[in-house]
Amino acid sequence: MKPWMICALLLALSGCSLTAEPELETLPAHDLSDPDWDGVINAREACNDTPLGAEVDNVGCHGDTSRELKQDLMVLFAHDSAVISPEYQEIIGRMAAFMQEAPEQRLLLEGHASQVGSAEYNIALSKRRAEAVRAAMIGAGVDGSRLDIIGYGESQPLLMGEDEQSAAANRRVVGALTSSREGVRMRWNVFSMEH
Image (tube, rainbow, N blue to C red; front, side):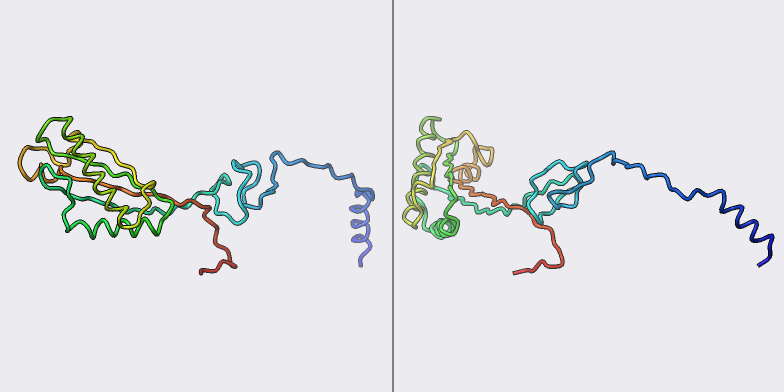
């Protein structure tokens, strides 16, 4: 090596110190830990109780998954009658079978009447109609404690009007059975399996 190169190298090295300054400890401005292992750091975390493996949003909260069960019932009646026509027995049987598969469900039977007659009479008639459907459901195997009735009379018509078509549609018992079963929606990972 040429002498002038050695001198230049030594001169450059002589400017360097052999003792390094200690590194300063830097503290993060935000908590970057993730103790619940949901992939969201504590600085952004809004829900600290995330179940392990749950699907979370940007702030670490898991959404609920719900499955809605729904079954409807409608029974129409003749004028001034609370007798169930044979054609509705199958519909009542299907609702009873559905309720036996979902024993935690309750059913509210809403009785209605057309505008013919006084308001007091129509309320009593609508209650008798709801009670007739309730009795048929009990006869089909549903526990009576799961069946509630209410009579609305003519106050909630399905069709407005005084013609026979409107009156026939308003002489009814309606039952809507809905429920949602909630749970935690789980995040997919490489180890997820479908059953």
